[in-house]
Length: 122
Image (cartoon, rainbow, N blue to C red; front, top):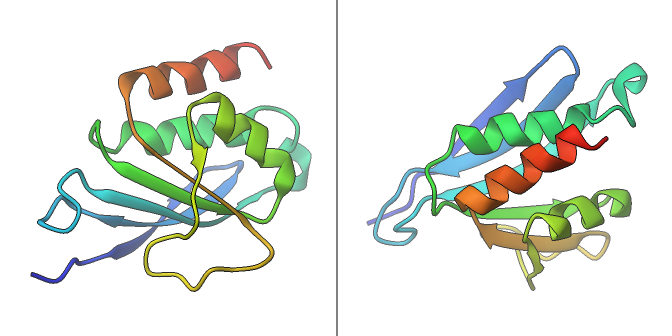
């Protein structure tokens, strides 16, 4: 069975997150979420809005979803590591890029709570 990846965009007044999502199947029994990129409008940067957007996106996914993100902006790495992401070698369906740091993890309730906690302490 071939995994079907649907490309989508989370749009808010603060910016967008492009992502792909695969519903659970035999290849990804808990589903697969791939971050494809994001843009935060300049006037909302350093204001915690990206964390809110990530939280909103995570809330749309079932607990247990495999999440992978390739970060070119190294300033975002600590945020993802604080909520439980670990370094991984490659992102599914991507050629390994030399200018990104790849992180991955499985969505848990604790991860959702941690994102919300980071929003509260900005």
